[in-house]
Image 1: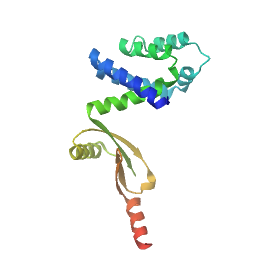
Image 2: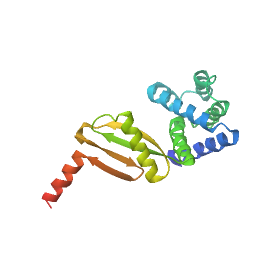
Image 3: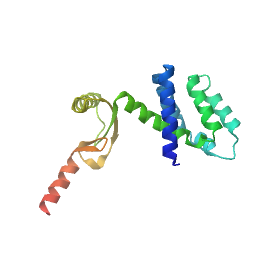
Length: 178
């Protein structure tokens, strides 16, 4: 079975358990924190993926790092995954959990790439415009791409809106060479 299928099933189990226990939002916040820690500490991800390191050692590391801080539901989930030999997909499962949480809550991610950093006001206006357009809650993930020259590109799911100067110049160039 592919890593995606396995991590997706474990993420669904964590989502269902969190809902059942009434701790969904707290677990979501803790999973997001876990993802941030794994991203910034590649050694931890290496330890979890290493088949030579024993499962009880991995559990001890996770418990020492997160045991006091995270909800028992999440700590128990980590222990189950590691005991089942799935420590190597904890990170992928955490990312999939966030995706499933967003789908459950009706939240969409709008990736905005702009030539210059978005001001807070522009980000808020764009968020409101997208939310009213699609009828769902929106989270803006912004990045800067100087190649756009000016404007921005918004991607929501499989839809993309190119309001960049570079995009307009490319369209104009294609029109002249058609």
